[in-house]
Image (cartoon, rainbow, N blue to C red; front, top):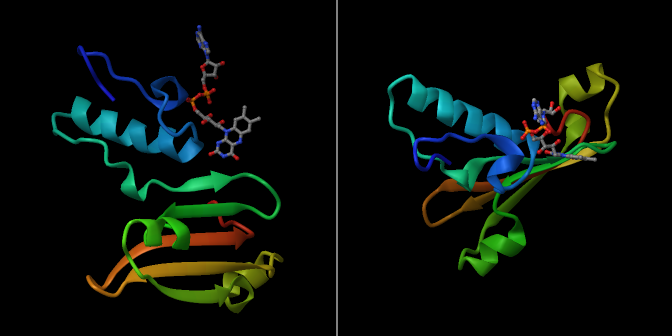
Length: 118
Ligand SMILES: Cc1cc2nc3c(=O)[nH]c(=O)nc-3n(C[C@H](O)[C@H](O)[C@H](O)COP(=O)(O)OP(=O)(O)OC[C@H]3O[C@@H](n4cnc5c(N)ncnc54)[C@H](O)[C@@H]3O)c2cc1C
């Protein structure tokens, strides 16, 4: 992010040119300009693809988790099991959560369907 007293946000940084990255970098810069010292940590910045239905993920996928030496627990749910999806008339889609059983920590999530990018 900032070098030589210049702050940059968004695609111009050359880091993961996605909307959520730009939003996150904006929060990091704002925090630093407000007097806090905050370093960017990209491990939990979401990636969203604005297609219909939307696709979004954050953290590890099964493939990257295994490449990192993890054997993740995987939980899946259908989006049509949520009230919001049905209320908004977008009952198709799914959510997948990955957890590292060794640390009992969520390490990734992927969703496809209405408002997945949110
Ligand atoms: C076709 C396409 C599809 C995309 N799909 C996705 C997607 O599915 N998911 C996703 O996360 N991201 C997607 N992106 C990327 C996303 O749009 C960018 O990562 C995001 O907009 C970056 O924000 P930014 O503020 O860096 O740049 P921008 O949003 O491009 O904003 C830059 C602004 O600066 C203005 N500007 C440029 N030069 C000057 C100047 N000299 N003076 C004053 N103003 C200037 C521009 O007019 C613009 O308003 C897509 C991009 C494109 C082009």
